[in-house]
Image 1: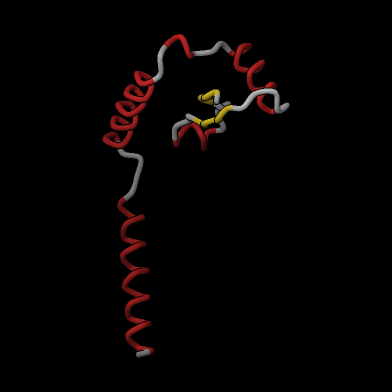
Image 2: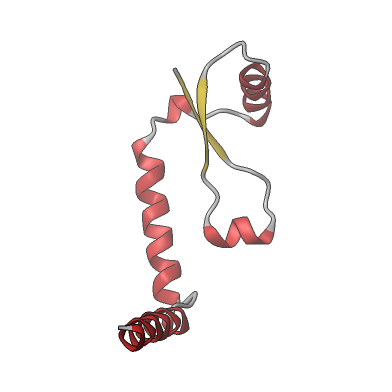
Length: 93
């Protein structure tokens, strides 16, 4: 029983490592990310887009508890790791 557990653990570990080895930021991944971003931006109406100043005012109200909203970080994977400024989607309740 102990040997079976060790064998299963080694197999799961090996398959997991192999999965990480083939994952990369290839051109296909970047192209698909761009397509997904374009689809996501079409979902939200243009009149719901805020300027930086409008966003700051709404963000301050939400943080002060004066307004309820969901704050969703919309940075892409490369933007997040590059330390780009936050890009939020605010959904008022």
